[in-house]
Length: 255
Image (tube, rainbow, N blue to C red; front, top):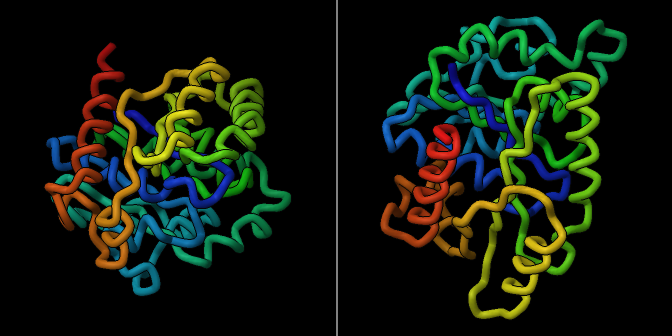
């Protein structure tokens, strides 16, 4: 039974998609069978894993509005052990088309449940907004992983996200947990990064991953080549950090 982890933070630019892409690829490189599921209309996870988001025939959008089953939408073996459920800008219309549809919070879950047994992990990249797409991701997921950028406003918006997760727990998915917080874009040269980490640890009653993702040029470059960091520069500090994070995620499931 695959573990489904939604990666969410309604603030943009916190390394959410970078984490979704590279955690998926790192898990796959460790021999885990992974489905990378892109719920962001920007489709950056899709293209960052080497899938042409505008060239695919069927996407998450077709799945959600009932135009296609999940089998038709999968891009298989994009990387060894990794399948992608792609997304593109069409998905932004789904919100409007779902108005008035019964059980619209569970459309994704119903489809993913059909194939989750094939995977060890399903990693969902959520859009940077608390929308119906994010709600669908959270009703499907077992847990939510929250990337936090090491900057001054890191905690801003986090309480709102946690509130949303709690509402989903109450009303839609009682089994949903907060997987934990992972720090991204850490700059060892600044005191600020360190202060943010300490501040969050003091103020947040959540699991915090030991692995901290550094600011890394290679990580930033990789998506423009349509590759995860594990393929683009496996020796970089960014790649090493995501491999460590993947190990933590695997072992967290074994506790």
